[in-house]
Amino acid sequence: MPYIRDRAIVLKKEPFREQDRRYVMYGREHGLLTAVARGSSLRTSKQAGHLEPFSIIDVMIAKGSAFDKLAVARAHGPSRPPNIRLASFAILGAFHDLVVSLTRPGISDEQIFDLLQELRTVCFSFPADPSPERSRLLFAAATLKLLDLTGFGPPIETREDDLSHTALLLSFARRSSLKDIIRVTATTDLLSATASWIEDALKHTPLMRAPHGPLTIRSLLA
Image (tube, rainbow, N blue to C red; front, side, top):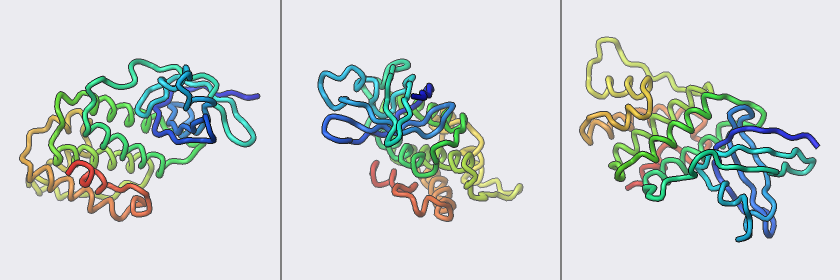
């Protein structure tokens, strides 16, 4: 039976049969992965604690004819901080759904793994819940970066002579790290205006057909 080994981020989990769960992950080397962990819904399961969404894990997956089986899962560092913020769940959960919608098994991109890891690090570092406007901008910027990596990035362009605050922040959001974006000093109105500009551009991408679009974060954090 062939096996694959990888370091992966757990995107989501769902029930599978009576005592099992199916896990969707994104691996650094193998991209989108789906595998069933036998008995992981039982209290006695030794692997379930390593497999919570947002966790980074080292996995060994056995390829099967009907479905792949999770043979080994070991957490790489702590799964999540004990004082994780509500905004972190909202942003990461919505973004993970986008990754599942916009990627396909068998196609890997280390930059997508790095983006997932970067967003996780930023969200876990919140000392307090960020404002809804800042959370919305962070999610929109991360989504824009994901679309750029998958080849669906919209052509958001600003004139060289456009020195408006919104245009400058838009350019900053596309080119800067997520850590810098969450720390940027700006008014609430400016954060909202920049997020709206990005979201309007994303309406012309495959996100229109995705189960969760950029506007999801607005309702989650309102």
